[in-house]
Amino acid sequence: QGDWSSDVCSSDLLLPEKFTNITNGVTPRRWMALANPALDALLQEAIGPTWSLQPDQWQVLERHAEDVGFHQRWAACRLEAKQQLAKQIADQVGLSVDPSSLFDVQVKRIHEYKRQHLNALQLICRYLRIKQGQTTSLAPRTVIFGGKAAPGYAMAKLIIRFRSEEHTSELQSPCNLV
Image 1 (tube, rainbow, N blue to C red):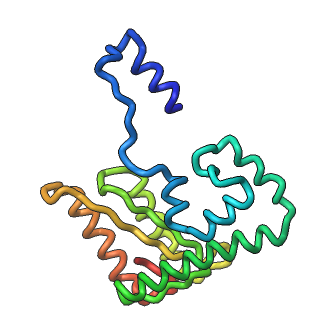
Image 2 (image 1 turned 30 degrees about the vertical axis):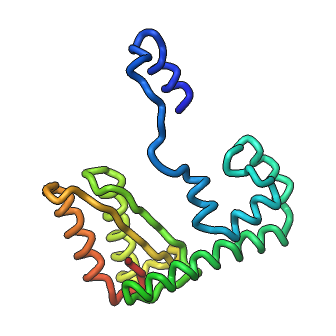
């Protein structure tokens, strides 16, 4: 889609001299390589040193679909990174989180996005299910929400307050909220 929209914007129809295609930030693949060096090393071993730059090479991973050893190494890389994050949360926030739980992370600029609201409502729904004993289909989950907002953005302040009150009311629950 990115190539298509760049082509449309740079066509003669839309003043190509006014269009510059520059990304502002780190791609998720490059971020993952920096955030989880062990997984990066495993992917370099399996795909090659340019795995993060060449997604078309990722089909090489299909060779490891039935490789139990590869799956174990993959899981170990992920668990190691989650243990490091759990330690950082404990050190900086004073909360203990279970590294073997599913980490549900949403960190982005705070706006009136449906995704942020739905995430908050879904969390409340899960919490109520836990309180009612309906836990058979729920995987252990640690929810991490973060973001920033402009100081004068009133709705963002309400969203932050809402998330903070969620966090405060649920600290004693079996749900980990950070």
